Image: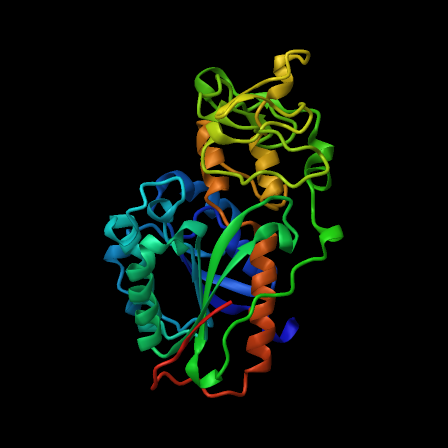
Length: 353
């Protein structure tokens, strides 16, 4: 990896830096990042002190003003409008249109690769026209584009988390990105692998879900408050020997701790606790436990005043180890293709993996 160290990357829609940390773990340098959400700035700057963080809306940024050409551009354009649980407006939503601002950076900077991460809902048939439009933009810029629906649990993450990974290489490389080989089933991570040592010491949030400052382990606190009827519409407990449910961007949807027995089904869309077990065993996973499940290291500290903001940052992030596996594959591809000319003078072709 030494010969690849400090290759400069631009990070867009950086969030709390899961994708960035994964690429850093593979020797890339996040030289410039952009995040518009002021509630994330303190966390990002604390964890990436050497990265220049732009805090403007990406809509207002001229990428020509960034004084270097990056090796790559990475990012996860906001996914709410593409989400299975969202409104399904896709490209008609202002957040969906931010994909084109991502493309604006590709057009100006012409990196050797780009990566965009998004939710599985991006591939819904209702979004096919919008997707064709997005991919046509990439192709017209001279990139061979591939997209893959991958589960992070196949790549060192103790969580079922399906995401779409879109990667582009210059057409002159005459190759498409292909995902790394998944882990063998017996090697896939579980909740026990991830958070067993954290099973003691979690503390509830303070009143009104304010952050609890008196914590032995940073961020090891969990939201308080009743579960909603939607939450009780299905089982929310995975056992120690299973991967976690998807960590979502909201504390009210955080899975229950695996110390609890699984919910019991009453009828369709209604489940209940095991009445023989103390109700306090059905606590939500703490912010730190969710971070571990997203494979953030314990020295990646999340800064917030309200505990729900911690869950939001983590749930919106790319799992770090998943990002690192993708980054490693790209790094090896770039090394192998390093003698190829980087040209953008012809149209590429789209490949689905």
